[in-house]
Length: 205
Image (cartoon, rainbow, N blue to C red; front, side, top):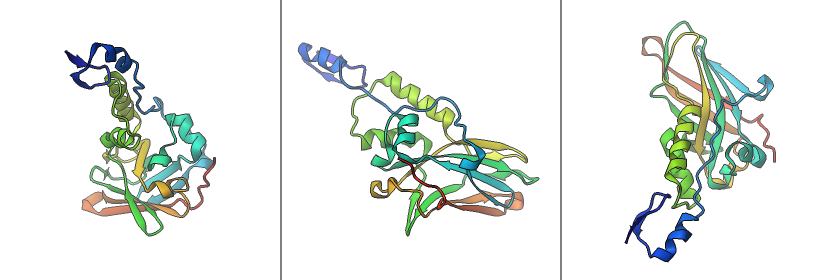
């Protein structure tokens, strides 16, 4: 008997196994549906060549459970709410920008927006999930993540950014770390980069 489960798996399953599969613990990542709102004093800031950067690292077990219903640093995923504002008089192009998080001597790359859920499923060993829940999570991620493209003068964008880090460092990932954004193009093709130390961020439990 051919069988396709609501968790996106297909194959042959005995009739008696169907109820068990239908009741399986299908799960996916909870994604915030509305923009995050932080007090100005909670944001760390830097400005380079007309690009103003503000960041609120998501820190501590409680903040991750409140936003994602999971302690993501435990599996090597960290997140930050980032705002970018163009204070120059020219368009800034971030469509090819490169994002890295430096912790000590090690550098960790930003997780591509479409790869966040894939990394989550793999790290949590989730092999079955409801397709409808997965599609919803991907749509919500598309809405809430930072889309850094061409930023016109006085323009502003904000959203979540995720990084893949060593789980052994993730619980205190802001201590002494540095956010580095490079390959930003300004007027006349000028290359701009922004560095912001997160040393003043203090993880909370």
